[in-house]
Image 1 (cartoon, rainbow, N blue to C red):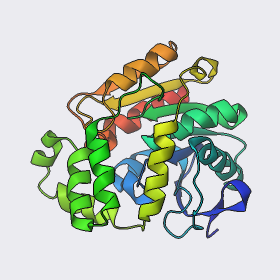
Image 2 (image 1 turned 30 degrees about the horizontal axis):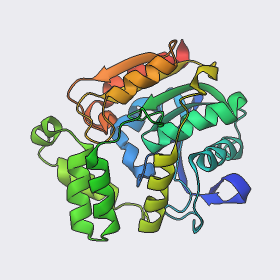
Image 3 (image 1 turned 60 degrees about the vertical axis):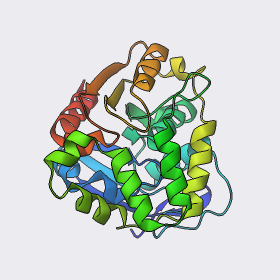
Image 4 (image 1 turned 45 degrees about the vertical axis):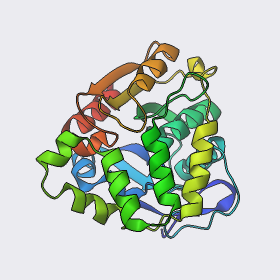
Length: 265
């Protein structure tokens, strides 16, 4: 299958690997399927049938020329689950993808078995997005590729990780550029993320919830994880000490272990 189908028949690019329980991976703003990295996927593929798809307008999928909301992206995710041949799936969404995952389980509860929310927020008046996120969006909007890569690398990965992994910046560059993400699409994603607000509805979620967050996240500060937890008292919170926004890059072993534990509880 060349594409999966989003809402309204929109074609969305994806990768699929592994076998076992269905697991849908939802990427963040300016992200795409290559950003998950083999380090994580290789640790999951013996336990899960993994689908990692690209948001509308990203990569080889159909263009996205009209503004959209996080709820629209959640409808895409629900359609992707059906297009993959699943009745329901475990869901792991990060950043913008974590917002989409929230809306997915709220709008289409029968499609979600469990949900892991990584480095994300509930939005609303109490949500906190760092100036670093705005700086990254400004850099992307400038269309200066090198500036965008430099600032997004610094925003996404912790100083500890960058210092410990000699080729970290080159790996980031290679993966980030592996799939085309048009600037207008990123700007629409940014607007959708800023308008996101599930604060009054998260208490309705009935499936198991896991909240994952790096304590050194420079984009969506870790206090957002605690806010999510206060809105979903039954959710479990796992913090990654000194990890940045892309915590699963920095600790794929622990990320995979936590996902397996969540989905087998």
